[in-house]
Amino acid sequence: MKQVPQKDAPLKLNEAGTWIREDVSYEVNEPDAYALEEALRQKEKHSGEVVVITAGPARAQQVLREALAKGADRAIHLEDNAFVGLDAANTARAFAAAIKEEKFDLIFTGLQSDDYGYAQTGVVLAELLAWPHATIIMQIEKTDSGIKVKRELEAGYFQFVDMPLPAVLTIQSGINKLRYATLIGIKQAKNKPMRKVPLGEVQSAIGANMQKIERLYVPQKTKKTEHIEGSPVEIAKKMVDKLRNEVRVL
Amino acid sequence: MSDTILVIVEQREGKLNRVSWETLTAAQGLAAETGWSLDAAVAGSGVASLANEIAGKKVARVYAIESPKLEPYTADAFAAGLKQVIASKSPKLVLMPHTYQVRDFVPKLATAMGRAVISDCVGYKRDGGKLLFTRQMFQGKLAADVSFTGDPPWFVTFQNGAFRGDQVEAGSTAARVETVNVEIADAVIRSKPQDVFKEAKQAVDLTQAEIIVSVGRGIKEQKNIELAKQLAEALGGELAASRPICDSGWLPMDRQIGSSGQTVAPKLYLALGISGAIQHIVGMKGARTIIAINKDSEAPIFEIADYAVVGNLFDIVPPLIEEVKKAKAGG
Image (cartoon, rainbow over all chains, first blue to last red; front, side):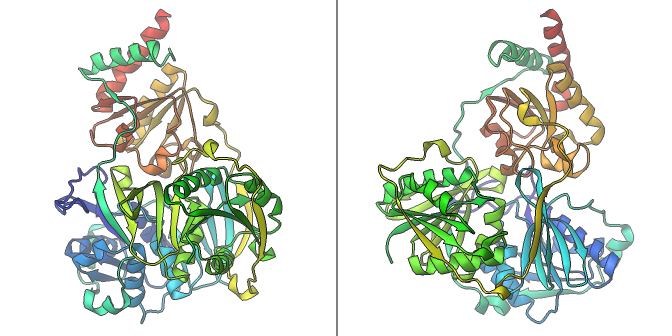
């Protein structure tokens, strides 16, 4: 799971113009919330254990706390500021190194993050672990030989895929309905195990980033935008005027 | 290593995906900019005719990458097959469209070769000796120019709609087509895909609508959908939504606009409380006129809007419905 800036948070660039300033509100990356929910549902159906993992500075722990409150059994936090700047390949390498003693059957990730939007980390992780993967998943069923998943394709098409375990799946938003944490869940979360992984523990697995953000900036507008201002009624009247005389749909 | 650009186009059931042409347009531009030569490739089983189709465009060579194992598509087979071709041809740059299929296999392919992908790019530029690829970040609120810091081959995917497919240059003579048979062992393919299908027959075909009123998260609650519906009815348009609204079940999935829903190009697209995430924008940026109402003045939707109203949609939409009704009644 990943912590990302809140959707409507105003973003400010740092002085170097290479990243945003840290003083924004954060929330859980939305597709990751669906990935967690799916893991909890699979556990409720088939029993087992749900482990949540994130990489990021101390603030990212909030994502894990929320996940534990919703029903995850334990958490792993790769805790360091440096994790924010890793490319997808290095993030996946760090995760692979941190979980090498684990024996997971399934790893879920959200299909992409709302900040970088690489849509790569889950698939890279699968390749590093030499596991099969499937992306943009809308349904998961256990079968005798492994699992059957429903992949979302473009333009309203879907496909079922049978695959063995262990596997990595990237989860599409909307696969399920998200639950809220209960008060008792929040209380119990405080006593659930949280393993902290410092950078040093996974450093040897990480190499130099293979891609670099040279410059981050507010995109240049390609379209001329006309602002319509005034009181709500004035705006409504002006808009109708545009719809009639310029857009010509009235 | 030869300085070559390799474009891998996408085909499904013997037809080229039209975003393939967009990537080819981008590649031709990059070839002109860098002076590198340009090759194209298409992978599958029995793709000779597709290779010939591409050979009519301005490219040096076209590879028809053939194996019966490439049909139906699996990430395992595609990564294995393409890895062989890329390793032997050693292109400097490998370009693909950022489709769901490419997203499924390209991170695996690049990782297997120890390389990186700059994904979902919308442009490129040269800065001194450096090649930079522009991609949207933070759901389109910011843009980043990204460079490769590792060794080639460099993998880049381009966003649907970032380049004009109809601007792809034809070649003066047909390019040479070379068949490359790749060996993919049975054990490589671990998943068994079933046939592709369409869920239910779509009840509404939004692609034919001239006016679309579309709602996003800013609508806040399911009961507020009614307000947007009234506006759509007053305008004689269709009601649509961004993905989160359909995910919440507030409107059926067949009213979803965006990469996972329908792609529309109406005369008027009125976006209510839609922030304008990339996945939504790719589905509606072709609209002739876009009007956006959003309380967040920094919402990316305003980047592509013709008319912008920064304000609370719950204040503005009710009088707007009244004014539209008046205008209609007045003829």
